[in-house]
Image (cartoon, rainbow, N blue to C red; front, side):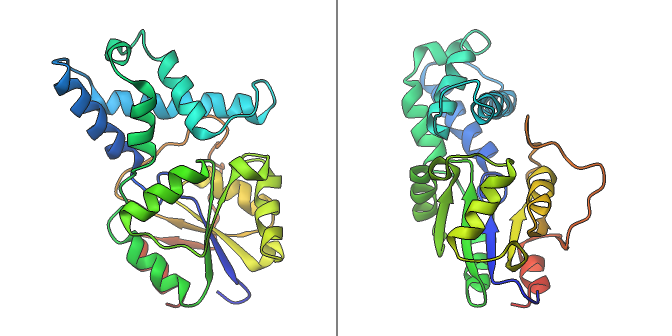
Length: 234
């Protein structure tokens, strides 16, 4: 797209399939302890509880913490509903899940294609270590990783997008946010960035703080990663 120099990728639920990764890990733990678990409900609840905490942190109602801290605290809040969590090492579950996220098919190859024309970086609420580890394991290569952990403000606060743009010495009009979540893109658009919505195989309904816009109106709407690349001229 003319004038766009950098692409800022959301990753949790856009590049990385957090839901099926979490389901696989909790199912393995359930088998190991001879228990049963509704893994889909578990994964959705974990994500929802994490974002409830994220919203409280973002608004200053809880102390600043990174996503690992939030995921661990979310598990602690879920023990009553999922008794299995009382019998396992919850810190290990956080690390084995969120530091080893599986990538959606086609994502690593698409990002490499996009890097031939654009600077391609991560902009995520997930912590830096989790994305470094997950990217390395999944073979995803970036030009840089920006975690809100270091920005001092979490998406969807507009300043998160603006700070990310300034770090590459760009104007918002020279940047594009890429995500599978309409709420993330709507916030980026309000901060002055271009936006690209990419569809992924696993629907991810963002929880609190990333409300979907009433009208979706993004610069690009791609059916998959290959379509995203074609729309962006690579």
